Image (tube, rainbow over all chains, first blue to last red; front, side, top):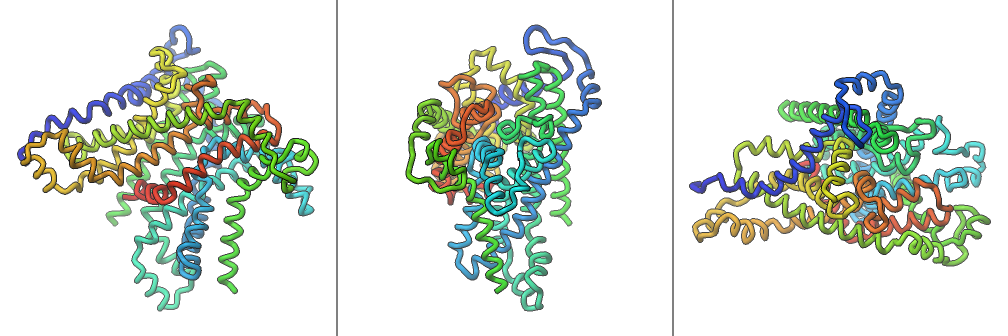
Length: 294
Length: 270
């Protein structure tokens, strides 16, 4: 092509300026702030690596990361596994016996929580899980009243409750992605396995799952990142409590920014979280690329 | 027999997924007295709308809806425009260093918003954009456009070259080619992006919570989330607020179901 390439740059200018002003400069500022002690007013005081040193000795910070691991299980691992089984059951079984319409209605039911604003999902559940809420009421109605408890107010149970809510929110996303992936898959492999006498479980494990590898990767990556960033449900359900039992790094940095006015420390937490997410993304993408070449 | 077990377990699953919506709807229609007498699981005796009306008036819900529509609508339009411009330069123009530019945009989408929150709060204060819808619109325009740039660039790489050559031979400049050829042909994809940007922005919570503090600017999720966090509502009012938060989401879902499912799969795996 004979056209000059230079002036295509003009089209990039608005986007690039916005990217610099809204993302790159603020991110650089955040890193800068993380080396200071600052209350948000007046001049920040340069303290070098003090915030990071403090962070690595801070039990609250490490606890918040442990809670994050629980949320990775609830938001990435459980939904991926459940999503594979549900998607396969819908695709292989419901769609074939009862029609694609039945399958897409069921799929829509599972997907619905995904379209809710996450804060609204939190409101719905904080009320259902309240001491006089629907869950306890249901338990006593079926004679299991002894299991009733303060689901979000008891430090021993709160994180498990939050994890349960997150499974409910997340599970629809892998189901939709995996069902789309199954449409792409080659049906003849399945038929061959069926002729060889493989049971449903065998076909699922040896044919369906390997074919969905790219989708499984994408779902695990995006859901793990979402779990590390999770803020809205924590804010609405528990505010990190009771007694810090559901605190997560994103909420902890928010607390330091706007409640404790320890902006430098909050920025250090946010920076560590960012590094972790970027490293994780790079590793995931590497593994995926290697998988594709193999 | 075994087949019925599978079907029934899927139906039970669907009921579990829908149960919270049903409980919310049931209780939003009860009077506080009825709720106190019968608890959260009973059917309402009649349709009691006063709780919904009271809540609507108390939080100025109409205003919140309007704010959400204005913010999400503006972001969706602007982010589609920016995505198209970026992708035109990167995907069709193939400007030098495009891989790295694309990586820079992708970082915008991957960074946790916590790592931008305080600087954005500070800069918004400095520029007078704090607690204005314009500030939030600018921020989410680029966050959403980062994803749009990624998605559109990869589809624009395969854009039919004959069309671009023909436009060039007809004397069209680059801008005319973009507006008359590229945009009309990619309209379906742009529509999907628009729907996505709208709903994603509608659902955003963290940055709007920090940047929109007054009643006149807040969006629906922020207004509801802040009220909930303050724990100042009784049970029927909470369910009323939850129902009002759920309804727009379900409306989007019913209107855009096809687009949504097609769109998330398009975005996830090229």
